[in-house]
Length: 163
Image (cartoon, rainbow, N blue to C red; front, side, top):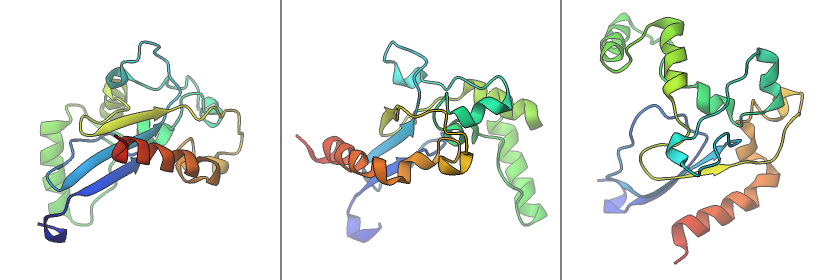
C-alpha cells in the first residue's frame, strides 16, 4: 500500500477517456472537462463533443477540449523497443477492433467525455473564437489559466469536502 494505507483524493483536468481507473488507492476521484454541451437532457454519460467539419473550426472552440476528446485509443506514440511494440499490438488487437485512421475515427465516434470511475464535472467555460490556439491549446489549456483557478478550487471543495 502507498502512504501507509491512506487514500488519495484525485482531480484530473481534461484526461482523455482511455480505460478504467484502479480505484483501490483512491478516496475520491473528480474529472473536470471543458465541454460545450450538444445534448440538453443532462445525461453526462452520453456527452460528446460536436466534431468539427473542417480543421479551421478547431481554433473556434465550438466543442470544448479537443485534446480530451480526440486523444482516444489509437493515438499512442511509438514504443522504444520492438518487443514493447509487439506486446502493445497484441493488446490493441484485443481492445481496439479497428486499424490506423479507421480505428482512431471509430474510437472518437464511440468515445465519451466522462470516465466510468469517479465524478465527472462538465464545464462550459463560455469562451470561443480565440483565434490563436496557443492561448487555449485547443480547449485543453483552460484548466490551468488564472481565470479558472478559483472556480476549480471551489468545485473541488464542494465535490469532495462539503456535506
